[in-house]
Structures are given as C-alpha cells and as structure tokens.
Amino acid sequence: MDINLEKLELIEMLMNTDKISVLKKIRAIFQKEETTFLSEEQIKIVAERRTEYLSGEGVYFSYDEVKKRIEQKIS
Image (cartoon, rainbow, N blue to C red):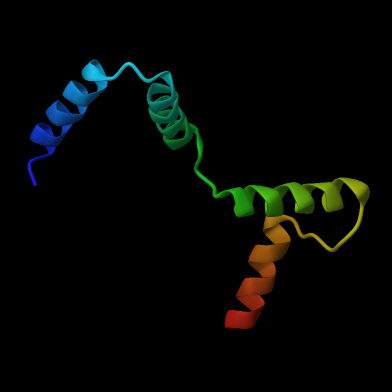
C-alpha cells in the first residue's frame, strides 16, 4: 500500500463531500489521536485512584519506598 496515494485519495474524498457529519467525525478522530495517550478505561482507573489518594484511602508509597522494596525482593 502506498501511503501517499492513500492520503491523496482521502483528500479527494474530503474535498468532494458536503456532509458536515463526515467532517466532524474525521476532525474528532484526529483530535482524539492527538490528545489521548490512555484508553478511556485507563483514564477512569487513574481518576479513581487519584480520588482514593486525595481522600487518604488506600496504601501508597513514594518512589524511594518502591525502589527500596524492589531492591529488597531482588536481594
């Protein structure tokens, strides 16, 4: 598959469409691709754990504590 040919075909299709819904969907795809590094599920998990951390629930360790625990397990 020639990527440049694919791009040109997509450009042509975009130029020939009058459907706003198609353009909005394509824009949304590009915006999501640019800004999302985590899946929706991962974002949800991070938000839940942040809430737990801020409320004092759960057990959390500093970087140094984690590093020390790992070193102890390896030794």
